[in-house]
Image (cartoon, rainbow, N blue to C red; front, side):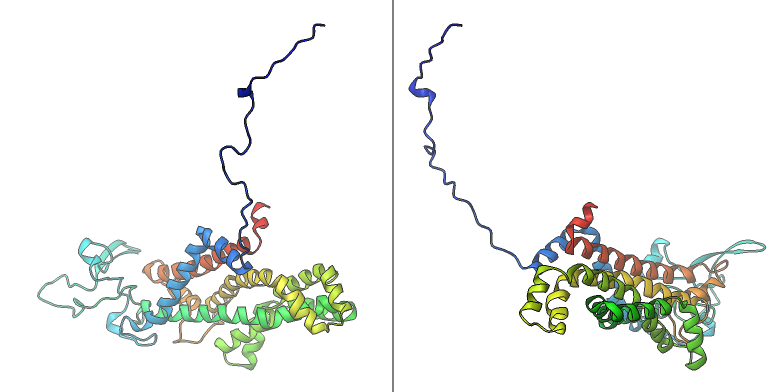
Length: 351
C-alpha cells in the first residue's frame, strides 16, 4: 500500500471568528404563568370566538329587554302570532313580516302587518317585532333576552357552587384521606345516586316552583363532579417532596391545602368549572321544558322553547330564536373551556 503525502495550503484553513459575529447566548426574561396562559389562550381561535360570543350574549342580556319598548309580561292580543319584522331588512324582502303557514288545507303565505285591502289599515304598518310575537301577543325578542339572563344566572350559580363547595369538599377529602375520605365519598355517592329530577320534584312540594327551587337543586348535586376532580388532583400531589418539606417545617394542614396544593391545581379546577356551566344551563332548560322551571309569566329559554313547541307546525319562528341563543351560549362556554384547558396544560392538546 502506497503512502500518500498531503500538502496543506494556507487557503485550506479558515480562522474562526474572523467574521466578527458575537456568539454570546441570549437570555430571555421569564414570564409569569398567567401571561403564558393568556398568550396561549389568545392564540386559540376557537376560544377567542367563544368568549366574544359570550360577551355579545351578556351585553344583549343586559340591554336587550330594554331595546324593544316591551316587558317580558306585556300582552297585546291584537298583536298575536306576528312574524319577525326588522327595519331596513324588510325592504330587501328579509324579515318583512311575511310567514308561510302549513295548514291542513295547504300552504298559506300571509303578512299580518299589512292589510290585503289598502283602504283598510291594520294599525301595524309602523310596528316592528324583531323576533315576532307569541300566541298571547308578547314580544319574543324581549322574552328571549330575559330568559338569557336566567341562563347566565344559572351559569354563575354553577361556578359559585363548584368553586366554593365542590372544590373545598374535594380538597379536604383527598388531603386527609382515611376515614374522612371514606365518609365524604360515600355521602357524595349516595347524593349523586338521586336523580336531579327527583330532587326538584321533592323541592317543589316544599317550595314554590321557581328560580329559587332550581338554584337549590343545582346546589345540592352540582358540586359532585368538581369535588371528584379536586380530590384526584390532591391525591397526586400530597405525597410530593414539596408537600413533605412543608410538613417537616411545621406548616399547618390548612396552609398546605390552600397555599401549597391549591395553586398547583387551580387551572384544572377552573377548566372543570367552565365545563360544568353548559351542563347546568341545559339542566335548567330541560326542567323548564317539562314544566318544572320558572313560573309564568317569567320566561327562561327552556320555557320559551316549551311554549313555542306547541306552535312549531304553524309558527316555527317562535322556537328558532330561543334555540339559537341557547345553542350559542352552550357552544361558546364549551369552546372557552376547551381553550382554557389547552392554555393551562398544552400537553393535553397532543394527547
